[in-house]
Length: 128
Ligand SMILES: [Zn+2]
Image (cartoon, rainbow, N blue to C red; front, side):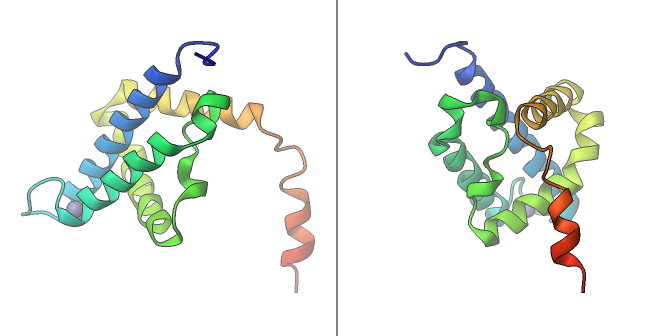
């Protein structure tokens, strides 16, 4: 097992629970009257779970395991972004532990990545 910390599997399982909870929240809010998750949302959920399973970062860089969005197809990426925008704040009420762990993973991911020069160059290229 190349998994040094031994926590990757647990983290992945938690990511799956988180994305599932988020999609269910989103579906309940947007597709009322249908079974949760509805057909459209289960498609997104299956896609998200498959991405997590195949994410090459998961084994090598577990702190970024919560950043699979970059490997989503553009269409799916828009959908999962909408889900996260909607469900993100609500997760604190419905699933506080999952939400906190999710934020913690995000923070660790952010800290470990090279964000030092990320914002500086955007100004030049966007202007005009
Ligand atoms: Zn739905």
